[in-house]
Image (cartoon, rainbow, N blue to C red; front, side, top):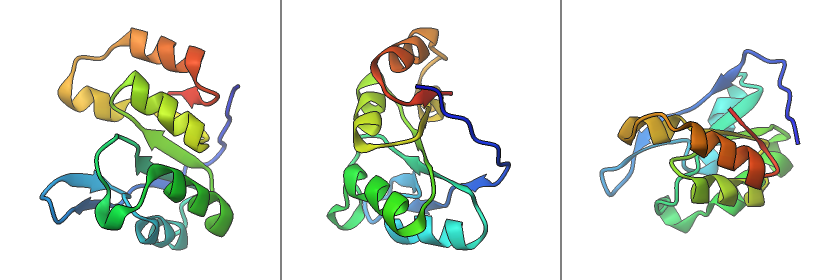
Length: 121
């Protein structure tokens, strides 16, 4: 599956959780604020870390689609996270979070493009 986005307006909201971890757009209210500011695409942290207040990736993606009518760019740190994000309904997958802790890995991109129903960028 190939996803095409013709917008330059995408955004994230970085936040520090109660556990002291930095996430971006970890909860629906963050996504709603980003959409209200004019973003056409909502980028979210799609790593498997625990989200505040028990929100899940599946719920967040569904709410962004259903309540905001926006596509979701899921940023991941591994093939497993990318596959999970695709299963949750993400429209595209980015590997930026992988790059914060590891060297760029072309095999991760190849694996995501092969195993996910989303485009890896």
